[in-house]
Image 1 (cartoon, rainbow, N blue to C red):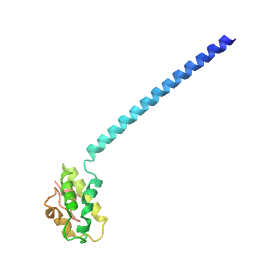
Image 2: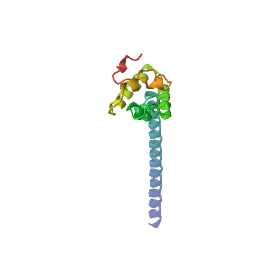
Image 3: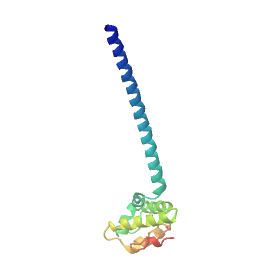
Length: 142
């Protein structure tokens, strides 16, 4: 009887070990699959969203004081942002998207000077691949 009980105990332990090993294998596969999916999503985001509104906002945020008349000229940080913004959009879709982001960002601020917005790239010596304007139709950008 004791031998039979010991045999059953060993059999149960082997089944538990096999089940645990299988579970570890399944969880390992799930982790690998999750990493692959996350990598694909990040790669797609990097390709699809070469330009983000966050990039545009961060580039132009230092310009708000100038664009609202609180500073007489754009700051060095503002012009650095304009120069950075110039490098972001590489194709028609990206330029249109960046243009829309500029318009959305401008809509969040009261008292922006339209002339200052229009002249900002020239004042910074960095022409953009699209005009800065509150009423420009971004869909017309080539």
